[in-house]
Length: 368
Image (tube, rainbow, N blue to C red; front, top):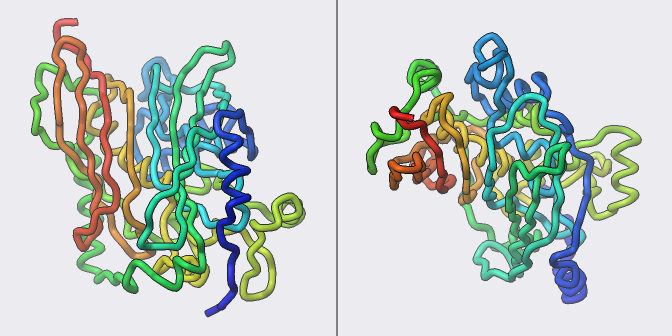
């Protein structure tokens, strides 16, 4: 395994970033500029969400597809964890708080306006110095109307310290054919359980009601590629385009075993680089995990519901081979407004916490 040494966080780099808090920032080309039927379908399949509301014009009201709330990640790289400053310091996406003024629909053209919101040093047993870097992004349509907003944050950690201290034991998960068949059965059950076109009325919901589980995995490199096809990634470039990127941002080009520069994003399929930054193996994307939790919410609320807010913290890396279950329960109900607050959690096959969060959903009233 390579013993390449990485840079450390300097006071000068921290001061540079602090001076830019509140300033507008626009970095990276949006992967999706219009929520076309193709873009929506690709994103939905990238997170394993087979809801026909996202994929089938013959099913969607008026033939106009709705979009999974988390598709916002495909429309802005800052929201997805494309951070500035602290060159050469690893960034680990750790959570997002997405807020919506209305549902996202086919034909929406969204423009994100981002700014650095906060830079806070956090104690860390995982690395040396660690900073939480928070961005706020506001999304407007072609008329300048606010459609959604979101905060996202990464932890910037010193790679060498993370590797030397470690945090996780080696993880390897193998599955028998019988277990794979049981997982396939879970996926079949999800299809039958989705609320779909039958409205879930707020009068029928009570605190403590379950949000049924959604299964994700077992995670593979192919799973990561499927998400990339719909989301676009942060630094995935090829040929001359990749060399242009590394010329502008030299710290992004980390030599692989052949001496060829590749971006730090390859921790999601390159187990060696993942271990070099202190993780036990290649692991999933943070925005992907937020999207999985959103999938549990939208399946539960049905087509007539409106996911007004999704707030998710990524708590642990899911490495290749791991299986994650996302579920939740109703925390509170406001019958007069239709607002239902959900508590969400995700766990691995071994019971380890993978993510936690909350959501606010607006449900229809039976008498409305």
